[in-house]
Image 1: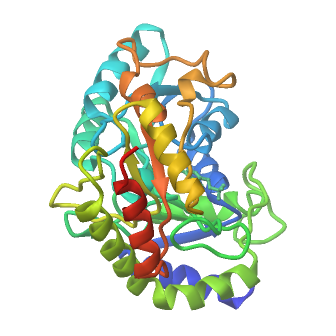
Image 2: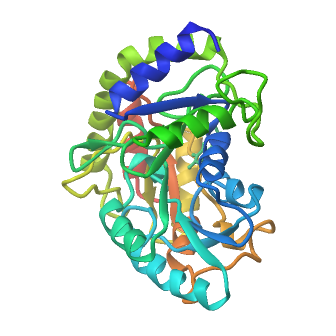
Image 3: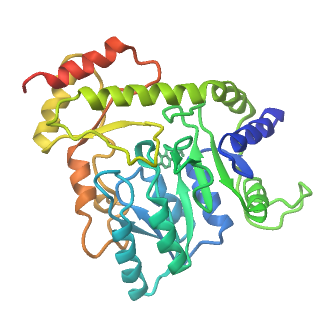
Length: 341
Ligand SMILES: *Cc1c(COP(=O)(O)O)cnc(C)c1O
């Protein structure tokens, strides 16, 4: 907790216009600390999209609450408001207490916050934004960090703002929540270090990682612009047989991943194989939605099924994306995808 940590927290808060930033050990801790700070635990239901990285739901289970799996919208790959509404009603019928929703800014695109907040206010539940991939994106001119009641992010090296190991942060506009988070990340300390007022944990951001992030933050805005240029170029030039990502006019993305969809699982396999033989790496985020994973299959889920999460898992793949991807590299990806299968 050297001086760079506090300096970084101030700069991160400034970047997204948040009142408070509390750094921590990683993005999973950030979610867990946010849940603890909101007093979420046994008997509480927390709504999470099924098509996400496991940590979004894992943190919920770790604090003793029940993750409830919601379907996605196939255009944004983010949580479907319609599925959330339906799943909320179902959850009350099985005697769980709806407490919070965790929209995930998947692949870097902010979730449908307006619709989610409408539902959250109606049902009096909190919104914890998992912006591990989307921190720095905007929604109606507002930067992620102030879009949820609490927003969490990760600085794992593969994230748009990555350090050289593990790191995370939590953002909120609420002073009392911020003080509680500051206490929770340091063993539930009071203002006096060896006075413990609650059960917390050890989740420090290393000073050396903070120093790296301070330097990388200086070029972050520029890197986001470069990512956006590459994404636009991909979207213009990739042939129509692939469903490329489209953003509504009121959002920008960090393009944590440039993820497109083939029409079928077989077409995806052919595309990935062609790219691989041209020396181009691709990846599937995520090959199996949470409701079909051993660890999560028995948690409650949308009673109407999670068809879009399943369809996405079967057909999505992600292309190389980095602010430093050369034009020649981009062209090679585009040309390979344009070859007849
Ligand atoms: C990476 C990620 C996390 C977890 O972050 P860690 O720093 O790896 O713990 C949580 N949610 C999403 C959506 C992520 O992509």
